[in-house]
Image (tube, rainbow, N blue to C red; front, side):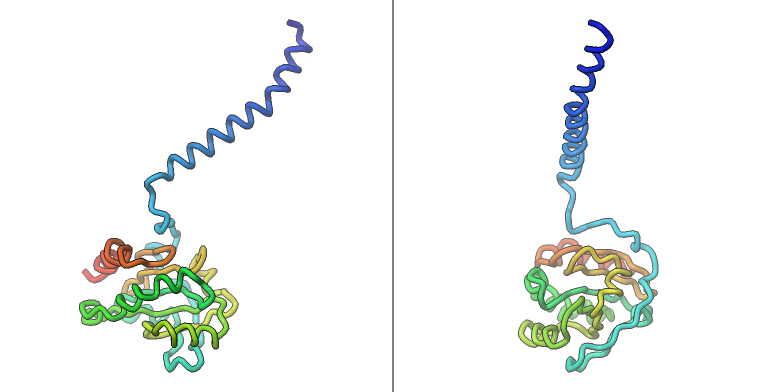
Length: 193
């Protein structure tokens, strides 16, 4: 075989080799993620202070707004980013009510607060009126700036924040009854010791 046909053979095989490499990487990523919990996305904020923010109260809710200073009051705070237009937020709402009504958590000073993400105040108020309002405070993040600082990947997302304002845990997606029992409550419990 001469040098010219060998070059042509190699060049014609390059797309196939490239495809094989990409397919191998895809397979590695897919198989490597099997068994991982999609609700637990890594967050660079874990172990760090909550971002600085000040959010006005949801008008008509009768609840105060929310700021990072509220997260440093010595008690664990659960921060839930939600929106009335978010279907999964409606799915998780009964679990949030159960969390807020938990007498053992109330006794230990744990509170649930909400951040209404890119939501019209009237729509957020209507959502909470119809589904129940489990939040001790609700901040309006109309432009989504605070959510960006929290590293939001999509609503709903929930953060467990220690009494000193340090983020201890992040749960991505709707909190189901099982997720509340098996994942979120144990993470809250860790912050109480």
